[in-house]
Structures are given as C-alpha cells and as structure tokens.
Image 1 (cartoon, rainbow, N blue to C red):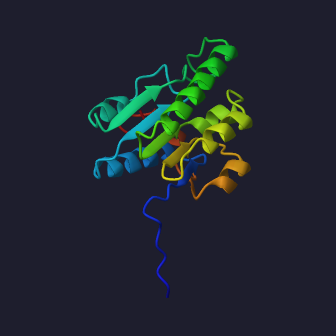
Image 2 (cartoon, rainbow, N blue to C red):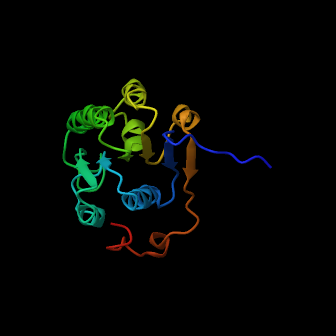
Length: 183
C-alpha cells in the first residue's frame, strides 16, 4: 500500500457542520492541538456575542498563541435578541473584513471562523463575501469553518468535512444547558 504524504505546507479547509453539538468544541480542540506546536491561531466568532461563554475564558489562557475576536451581536431573532437584523448584518460583514485581514496577514497557521455557516445561512453574509474570504487564504493556512447548515458549495470546496449528528440531548429530558459543558 502506498503511503500518502501531505506537502509540509499544505493548508486545509475544514468544515464542522450538522445539527449535533460539538462543532465549536472540535474546532477548539484543533486549536489546543496547534498551540501544542506553538502555532499562532486566530478565532473569529460570528453570531455568538451577547453571552459570556466558557470558551472565552479558556481561550484567554492560551494567549499569546491564540487571539479571539467576537464579531457577532448575539443570537439572531431568538432568546434575548433586541437588535435590528441590519445590526447583525453589519457586525457579520465587519467580521468578514476582519477575517480577510487576518487570513492575509501571514501571522497565523490556523484561522477558525466559528459559526460562519450560521451567519451565511441566516443571510448575515453572502456567498460572494464568503467566497472572497476563502480565496484570500494562502495555500499554507489551515482554515476552519463551523456552524449548522453549511451549504453544499462550501462542503464541496472543503478538504475535510465532519457532520455532527444529534442522537440524544439532555434538553430532550428537560435539562437546561450546563456551564462548562454547553457554554
């Protein structure tokens, strides 16, 4: 059997999608692994913004290797959202601009765009904007996109796609989200 070898500088486009939990967690697991090799990582969170997640505190502990930018204005149209849709759109578009800057900077080996698929699915950003972002990626940069509802065109373009499938969830038994597990 022939061994398959990657070029040492071949960046991957990774997509974590699906209706199950674990997309952000998988991306952050990759982040922790990369920190182990002293990589520089940029995490940009779309949509999430109004809540204070445990991952924010956890990422702070990974500084200076990991930089976090929260560009979302929070959940769109649900829970405690009292913002105009246009505010969410503007925040997401600014996030695209920031992501392109970070991708082109040459400072990072890994960029994680958390919940970008959700921003795309909700219409906060367009296919054209995301395509421009993908095309800004140098061939050596690893790029991870997370979120439910990744479109087929993004899945087709990716090198690695994992779909998280919900099989069972504590919420179905009446349990609320738990600190340290869900947020």
